[in-house]
Image (cartoon, rainbow, N blue to C red; front, side, top):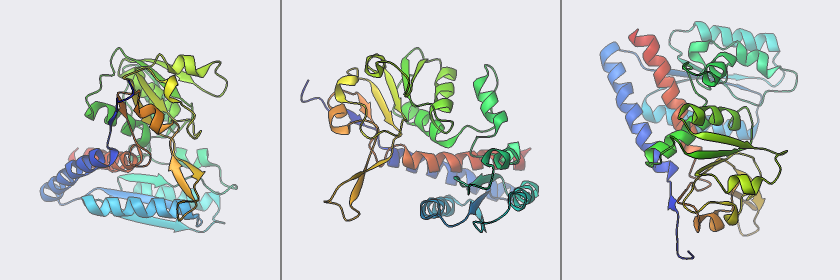
Length: 296
């Protein structure tokens, strides 16, 4: 068993393939209709992490030919003013996707703001109507949240069968755990959710053919928690101290990568696994929204 090495799922390479597919479609829309998809990103205040994330999205848009519409608002903007701005973007025919960068300042009700985004422009997939349809059999949401959608895309493009398999989702957040659970159910997996109140999580995880780790706990899943040959998608991005790095820290996932590699059949690295897929799926959702608006 010791010389076994899991197949590493290269999220960067898969995301790059998806981006070139998107670029081709964007060119086709531009040549056929003279229009390109537009993505509006609303950022409130000046959080460093939000800014770097938004810059990455901006670059990704430019690379595939999607028009980026940026709205920067001050930290003390009122909730009413922010909602007005969302309404303005809802009405703009050149904008096909609207993304409000979270977290928002404390004085603003996130749920209230997100609910104001037009359903057909909700490229983040967090509108209650989209999540509601995701939860129902035989209904299709207009958009699926980007990170969960990216997780399933990684499985499918790596040739991993989901139908009939036992899947365990570790974590139950609204952003990843819950929607990825619903997506796996839609793909006919048998799904168990492990969370902070679960008794003996390792014995449940050990039965899984597919593990989606999204708990935000550094290296929580050990090698001996994994069934030999299982597929492991690690969504966790946790900073741990590392004096050998210039930054003083390094990023690790929710599973112990070195141990897991010796047991799992497939594994995503952190960084370079799920991360690049989140942005690729955002571009894909924006393209899908644009196609619905332009080709109807």
